[in-house]
Image 1 (cartoon, helix red, strand yellow):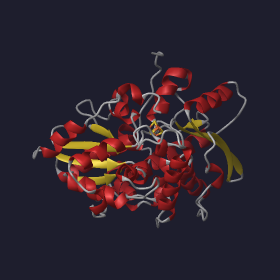
Image 2 (cartoon, protein in one colour):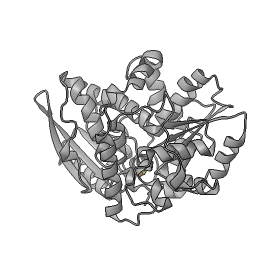
Image 3 (cartoon, rainbow, N blue to C red):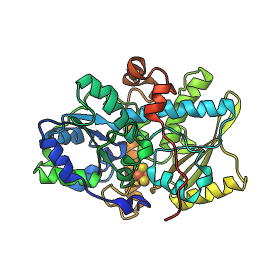
Length: 378
Ligand code: SF4
């Protein structure tokens, strides 16, 4: 299922156990949006069972010192990616802007379309933004050395995230990795079983603060069309100065491998495409190169239905009905959140106020942005 991650699949379960058991280490963990609607399947629950509270409770029971949410960093991604999109729109930057939070897709682009490496947003993925903020802002708050004492573990639906964590271009320091270990949903389920925890009886708990608060816009990152929709919820309000009353862009919902939508902002049509599956993406990029279509924003995910169908999730064997149930569960999580726009996340506002300055600031660029490499095909 996973086009590039499969080449670098490696389990870090033993390393993570060792870090947790080392009393000198402060080990924090982040959980990606798609994990919360799939992990319960490993324990006999129906696809699409929302188990956020049990997920947090399980991670705390395993011994992590703090349990945080990748969703926090997904909101941060929107702040940086949205700002970049608005800047490109206003200043005639490279168009279309391609989303960059899927490392499977980014690696594909670097090898197959090396001439287009200026097109993806330079914003790092939520996994990597979380790591960069944890090893700087959070490390300072808890007074831990980011190289020796603070360890960051990710729980991802994804195999390619393991490779992403080691990309030199994406790490903000030469001294350490921002994310030390990336585990899959399946690996976490294995740890829970190894620890002898009974998933049915795990109490529901809340994420820790301050990297645990998130909006509904972050939840939908886990399904196809969600990143584009989250970006539009913010870009629309920033560009028009008006409140977006209906936050769901229905044309971006759906499960066709390639979809198109148009949204009017300040009287101008913003043309968007959403694609998953690298065959669909290749066709879309070929059409752009041949100037057959003109677009402003393209959301790309390598896996079927987006991260809910990721290669690190409980096996779905290509069954789209399973993937849809997980995606609809994420939509329900979003709909049940009081705050559904990334720029209204109070912890994100505090992060900019206390540490980063503004979206797109020099510090934000150093910590939260990356670049892409023209690579030879293997
Ligand atoms: Fe990983 Fe999600 Fe991309 Fe699949 S779509 S490769 S799970 S980031």
